[in-house]
Amino acid sequence: MTGTASPLIESALKRDRVIVLALLVAITAIAWAYLIDMAMGQAMGGMRAVSWDLGYFAAMFAMWAIMMTGMMVPSAAPLILLYAAIERKRHPGERPYAGTMQFTLGYLVTWTGFSLFATLAQWGLSEAALLSPMMVGTSPVLGAALFIAAGVYQLTPLKNTCLKHCRSPIAFLLHRRRTGRFGPLLMGLDHGAFCVGCCWFLMALLFTLGVMNLLWVVAITVFVLLEKVVPQRTLLVRVSSALMIGSGVLLLATS
Image 1 (tube, helix red, strand yellow):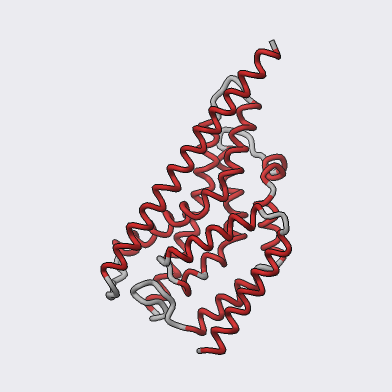
Image 2 (image 1 turned 30 degrees about the vertical axis):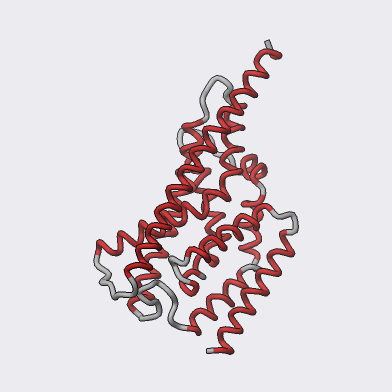
């Protein structure tokens, strides 16, 4: 009986992995397609002043939420796939999709909350004329301050704690497991909170580099992924910190 069940479970795990991965790829692809379309539309439309009415605020909030989805789902995919596999092994007779969807939803809800704060920050910077209609920072001093602050944050205990949880999916699923009907959702919120704590200053750099500058959006996305997977985490953190602080000092010197 056990010999028969094992191949069946392994087959189910492979099928689950393909289905979950396909869904994650689809979500990411849709988000990036939206961002590319919006960036192209912005480039063709040129620079023009906008009024921050309710409709524009909602559009910017949607942009941030979709951008965070496109940027963060790839780095969360290994944990989501691992969670689906563990759920399959814990409950061989049940499909793990409902719990996995809850987990992913909780993760994205956390980043949607961050998107609201980012939209409010963009509104404030725009009203203070510190952000151009093309959503690029206009103040070298503010840009320098953001780079230096982001570089310093790379070395803080809070950053280290959040990154430690993001880099250890097995430890996270073992030590921060939640049970009950909404357990997967709460776990997704929990993991999302650590990721926000790890990456929020990196996202804030977009206010200097250009909120819709896709080159920098891709660069930050790749860097976030590298922070979670490269073996030499300490070296990467220190080098990135030095580069950010150095960029900030250079901005101040040339302003």
